[in-house]
Length: 152
Image (cartoon, rainbow, N blue to C red; front, top):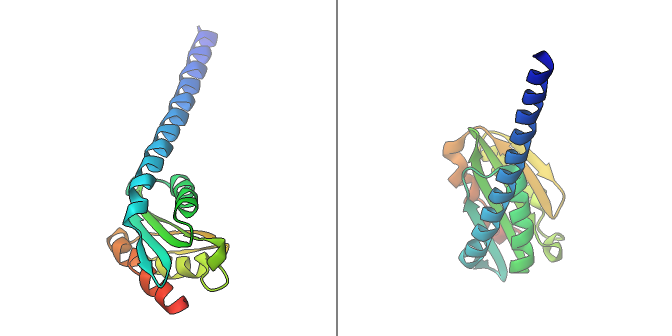
């Protein structure tokens, strides 16, 4: 019957929502584990820990959570994470609050997003952006060290 069909469809849609939520949680856990590994690859630039990483498949939400986690873990740091997600470049930059007088995440993001044919911005301590040129992502990430060298 028609009512039966509506009920079944509702149940399928609800199950789909639950599975999507579960997937998001698992991706966040995976990103968090990746964050533990990533922190060891930070380089020291004039007393600032600089960390860049490409984590393809992660969305902006996962990268934001990861940048927060890494800022807490690294202390005095500048972080730029990038990902190709659903054929678009996603970027998230973070600067610890003790450095925002000299270095602003929004400024780093403007440069990085421009490099991938997009735009971005945000607060001095956290910024998001994106673009369309996935081939330029590695070059965009590489802008972080010179950004810190010039700003400190």
